[in-house]
Image: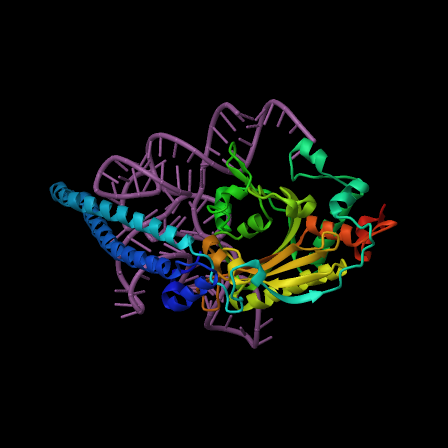
Length: 424
RNA sequence: AGAGAGGUGGCAGAGUGGUCGAUUGCGGCAGUCUUGAAAACUGUUGACUGUCAUAGGUCCGGGGGUUCGAAUCCCUCCCUCUCUACCA
C-alpha cells in the first residue's frame, strides 16, 4: 500500500511511475485518493470538535454529580442530546470515507523505481546478464518428464491418485535429490548470514492481507473453510508477517531470514504444454530469503540477494540469465525486480527459478512494520525477498542438462548432500 | 472436544462507571556522582491521527450495545493458559 504523503508530495512523479507499470487510470485514481483524503480530514476536524465538546460536558457532569448538584447535572445532560446525534453522523461519514480511502489506495500498485525499464510485455524485460553455455546434449536427449519415468524418481500418476494433478510423488533418488537441494540452499543462506525460520505453512487472513496476497489473489491460494486458514503460496508470507505490527530497533536491522517451506498454488486457469512436468505444480518446495532493512540500505541488500542467487546457480553449474523486469511485467507489489531463469536444455526453454524483489515501503506500510530512527521517530522499513531457490524447475534443468548415456550426473557441489553421484 | 481462568503500555502487574492513556516495579533513555564503570539518586519514557507549532481526537484482544460519561457493566467473536479427554 502506497503512502499518501508520497502521492501528495510527488504527485506528478507518482502518476508517471504508475503509467510505467501500465496502470492506465493513474492520474484519476491518485486524484481520487487525494480528494477523499482531504474530505476525510475535513470531517475528522468536525468530528473531533464534537467529541471534544462531548468530553467536556461529560466531565462537567461528573464534577457536578460529585459535588451533589444533581439539578445542574440533569440540565447539562439535556444539552448532549443534539450533540450526540451530530457526533454519530459525523462518525459514520468518517468511517465511510476511511474505507473509501482504503479501497482507493489498495488498488494502486507499487511505484516502480526509475531503474525499471519501460515496457508492457515479458518480451520487453531486459537481459542484464547471461552466464554459462547450454550443454550439447546427445541426439537421444529427452525432456525431464521422460527422464523421471526412465529412472523412476518422480511419479505424477501416483500423485494424481493420492491428491490430484500437480502433486507429484518423489521417490528414491528423486526424493533424496529434493532433500539435498533444500539443505544445500539453506546452508548456503545460513553461511551468508541468514537466520533459518520454520514458519507455519497455513496462515490467517490478517497475514494474507499483510503481504498483499489478500484480497486480490485469494483465488490463487488453497483455503480451508473449517478453520479459515490459507495454505501459503510462498514462505514470504509467514516470514514477512513475523514483523507485522512491530516497531523494530534500528540496531536489529538489517534482518535476514531464510526459510524452507512447501508452497501451494491453485494455478487456476493454467494448462497446456508449457506447464508440463515440473514446470508448474500445485505443491512445490522453495527456500526463500527475506530481508528487512532501513531505507538507505535496501539497494545494497537487493544487490547482495542477487549475488547470492547467482552464486547458487553457478555452484549448481546451470546456465542462467538475469532479467530486469519491465514496468508492465512486474508484480503489483514490487518496486524493482530481477528474475532468474535457467536454461533447460532438452525443453530448449528458459525456466524462471527465482525472482528477487525490493518493495520499498509498500509492504511495510500495510504490515505496519517500522523502526525507530536516529531522529527518535518511527519510520517504515523496506522489505525485500527472493527465492533461493524454487526446486522443481531447478530439478528439471538439472535432469535435462546433466543427462548422459550413463545416467544423470549430480553437480559436484551437491554430492555431499545427495550422497550419490549418479541417478541411473 | 469438555470444564475453569484470563487477555491492560517493551515486560511484569494494579485498576469494577467520572480529570485513567491509565498507580507501581523492571527494562530503555538523559542527568548527578565517579578517572571510568557499577550502585545510588533525579528526571524522562506507548502508538495512531492532527497542527507551522500548540490544542484537540482515537486506541486497555476484535466487533457491537447500555450511559451525559466505560479499561471498568451487557452481548458476541477471537485468542491464551490450567485441568480432563484424545493424539504424532
